[in-house]
Length: 270
Image (cartoon, rainbow, N blue to C red; front, side, top):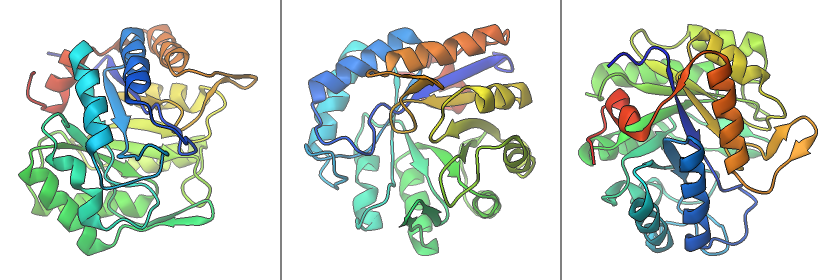
């Protein structure tokens, strides 16, 4: 299948400030996002109070409810600012319902916090995700992360093409500017595919530029921003997905279905 004109919408529905996780309510919101056009959902392993944890019980409940109603691709984070060990952070990689995962290959400042990804921890995560047959989405917050991943690609047998997510907008990392986007994209390894994540987004300008440059994924959701536009905040995630789908179609591109996205990323069909 020719995917050159297709775009995957990934929804990250839970804000870092969330203080209550209800599996039924979260699964229902993910289903609504799926109906709006999301082909992938990005979740963290969280306790009931929203804090990051190695205990996957609540996540497992959520994933079972999500899978009962849809074929949306399930991606779980192996990161986030916390005191968890790399072994604890990689706990979701052992869950059968998890198909993909974020991969962070370097440390970075995020606001007043430091997101630590030591080299030995990175390699542990790479080995584990490959052993568990999970597809990584490489989150690059600055150019050094891209160069590090290119070295890892020369040493490990990743499923091709490797998916990169260019992450812009975090204070302390690459800014959400056209110049930064161009520089980040120019550094991507040949043959990889890429998408855009815009933290603190207030409009779709960076998304539009990225799509014009060949981005094939866009990430929306409360983890990054609850702004529909510069003046409008929303209380649910589906309007953000619909807005992204509208932009994709306005640019004469097509929204990927989960089935298409699995083929695109080399994920086994359900």
